[in-house]
Length: 123
Image (tube, rainbow, N blue to C red; front, top):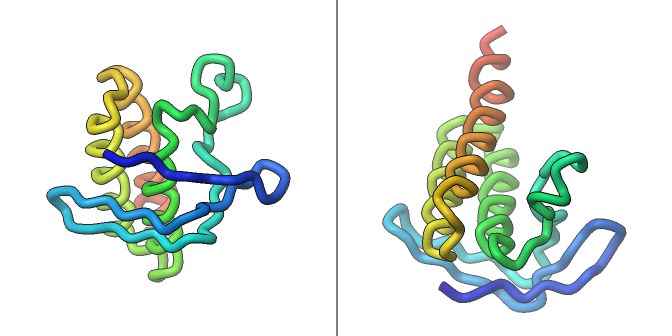
């Protein structure tokens, strides 16, 4: 799996220098150059254990952020968030991120999306 190439562009933001493509069993994701991300949304108290812009998992984070942004624009479609989470998990494994960390990140994202876009939208 290729790695993303980013440059700092704003406070706590990074910009994709060149377009990035990723292919998995769910299809192909093409992210245009110029896409901006803040890295992983990890609570600051955990940054010493899981830094938000660690090269270990940053490529998977950029893919996930891009897919979540698309899902958000698509009327916050819950199924699109689930797809983003599943692709994120696959990308983490392809990058060689250890099982515990991959599962932790995946389940954290999946739980967040369930609570925000499925459970709370019913009300």
